[in-house]
Image (cartoon, rainbow, N blue to C red; front, side):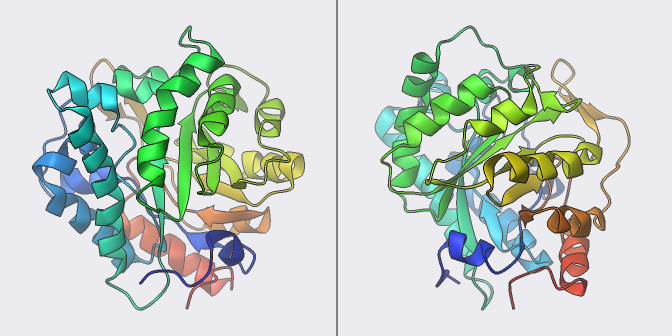
Length: 307
């Protein structure tokens, strides 16, 4: 159901369970995601599949749903012949589909509109490297139209997610100024630094003192790195942390496939919450069954604010 409380109010009461990877659930439903638009293609070609994927996570216990707009950009849609007016409509649809799926339960479910990094539009894995050679001002110009379109659909929060470097984080926060919707900022990290190699404490500091930011943290990283990152994010910003690592497998952009072993332990969520995480879930390759186990672990420890 639609939330009664703001997301910030809910985070003050305890941890909320995020969903998991949308693409892996869509693949489990039999969807072909080989297109450069990835799951965003289905906003036009199979919206019912996206809603079904969201609903699977709601049934598993997720109370915050991240929309299918991560790779949905005006530029990306234009490459497949979709005009700006239609692209804007599809961005709005991403929020509507998540909101519709949220109605499946009698508990509050919040909708986070995904704003992926510039590199996601390139579809070449560069969101795991950053440093695109663009200025902060250029990145701000790129992100602002999509943020405005998504904000117009009235999500509960904008998820500025999988951000590889602090310069893009600065651009995203500038682009979101005045949009009327709170945001969370989530970096993708490796070896205790941003993917671009920057000091993580300095990267988190970009959001310190920004009242629009309701949470700061990491996503799409090795789950073994999540605990230290959560602790640092809280220490640097004084804000609740958001954390949703991937399965521990690694994405090969050239082969367009995953390698390695599953290393995500749902029980780790309890430790993340103890360190200050208030939005806790999974990213790539983390499915509804794992989110269900994570939700159960948090409830067992009294850390979930739903119910």
